[in-house]
Structures are given as C-alpha cells and as structure tokens.
Image 1 (cartoon, helix red, strand yellow):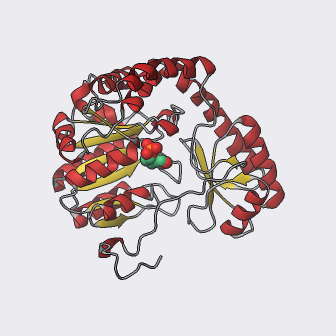
Image 2 (tube, rainbow, N blue to C red):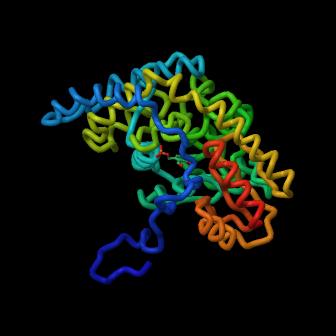
Image 3 (cartoon, rainbow, N blue to C red):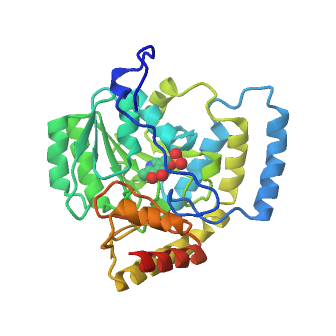
Length: 361
Ligand SMILES: Cc1ncc(COP(=O)(O)O)c(C=O)c1O
C-alpha cells in the first residue's frame, strides 16, 4: 500500500495491510471459522423482545461496566469449567479482538511474543498499539516445543505472551500441563500469559481457566463468535484476575459495548445450551471431513477446532483456492506454503467442499 506524503501516518503502520478475509455473497463461505447454523425462530423472537427496552432507552448511555452481562458470563464460565469466579474476573467487549487490543494498550509495557503460525491479528494489534512484536517458533508439524518456547520467552523478556489453543490456523491444541509450564516461565520474566481460547468449546482439553486460581498472571480470552454462533453480535470476553480486569478499565473506551449488544448477549447466554447445541455435530463433521480427506491422500493437521489445515494437493495454494472459489466454495489461503484452511460448515456444505476438493486437487 502506498500513502500520500500529507498523511501523518505512524511510521510503524506504513508497511502494514488491513486485516481482511474476503466477504463474498452467494458462495459457500468456509473461510472465517463461523458457526454455519443460524439462530432459531424462537430465539430471534426472544432477542427482538429483549431489544425493545434497550431501544427505548437509547437516549441514555449503556451500562459502562456491563455488570449484568459480566455476571452472566461468569456463571457460564463457572458452569463449564468448575471455576468459582465472579464478574470482577470478567471483562467483555466487541469481540475478542477488542479484548486483545485493550489488553495490549494497557499491558504492552514491553514486547509481546507469539508462536507462529498463529492468529495473525495478535501481531497486527501489537504493532497498531505500538507494542514490539517478537516471532516465536513452532515445530515443522505446527506443534509447540515448550522448551524452545520458554527459551524464546527468556530472550525476548516480553510483558505479554500469546498462546492460541486450539491454534488458529493450524487447529492443534496445547495440553494443559504445557500451558502450566508456560505460566511458570511467564512468572519468571514478569509477563502476563494470554491464552486465546476462541475455539475452546470445540476441544476436549481442559480450559486454562482451571489454572487461574494458581497463576494470577494468566488471562484467558474467549469469544461468543464461534461455538456460540454469535459472530455478528460481536461479543468477546476475558477471564482473569480482578487486578488485570481493573487495568483494562483504564484503556477501554467509555461506553464501548452498546445497550443492544448487552441485551442480545444476555439472551444468548440464557440459551447457551441451545446455541452450543451444534458443537457436537460440528465436531462429528470435522472428523468425517478429516477421515475422507486422508482417504483421498490429503494431509490434515489434527484439529481440535471447527476448521482444518490441509496439504498434499498438487496445485499451488493460491491456484487451488481460486479454482475452488470458481466452483462457489470460499476457503482460506493463510499464507502457509503448501497448505489451505477450511472451516467446518453444514453437512451439505462439507460434502460439496469435499467433492470439489477431490475433483480439483
Ligand atoms: C484465535 C482467534 N482469536 C480471536 C478471534 C477474534 O474473534 P472475535 O473478535 O470475533 O471474538 C479469532 C477469530 O477468528 C480467532 O481465530
């Protein structure tokens, strides 16, 4: 991207490009790890009813501290992880991306490190918020070598360490015992360990939330965008020690979470069993896709998420990506040589994807 000389753009941003997966109408969209199932008629009716009082009061600012929503999120977390947290341990925002940004603004006092390939928005937000980013490494099979990671942490001496599990775009998860080792290393260098669990509900590994009582410098970032089928509403949250939450209050924008968003999220959480009801089916579909792809000579990274990183096709990734799109199937070229990523869709969408892949590979 080239910039005019009159634009006082920060030098650190001049070489960056905006984040942006293509949004294309009328295709089978398997490129942003969304939940493919839309909300039920009953639930949308209930959400409309919940919006009415929120709309009537739009002349007023929303609850700045989202107290009711944070309490409801704490109840959901306690129920699903056996923790004993309250609203002081939760912060909520417009998607977990906003959580990540608020975190970096408040706590990026030194550099941040993440282990690549991983979620590309972590380094992007770091750079946009003026936090130096350090690339940590993974093994060639995309698993994390914890002892190498700890050595990299000691060299970088960061204030923030990012771990994504299950990892995007690779899909593999990090065992809880290894997260604990990283939490110990984080304590040694005085860093916060940020565990991005955007896909946690698809995984069978215990959540890092179970370590929070022992390691106060741990932060777990979650979202309602994926398993909860709630991406359009933009609700992400963080589970952490109350002091970390208090630090977030300094860098959050006042009244950042709209009254409508808070009202809708409360309804969604009250119906979490229904919204999460498709997770089991998505896992079954994921495993069906992997089995079928392997049978056709495609290599798949073991996935604990709702997407699969695959390789073993003869075309260049960009060429296969385009050929699939020409057939109406949108997947993701994540820039890893020889690999493409596909999100798990409805059974019919997945079957179409598989047929198309086997015909074009
Ligand atoms: C690992 C990871 N973290 C965070 C996010 C951001 O999700 P959202 O801002 O929708 O909560 C994503 C979205 O794809 C993701 O893959």
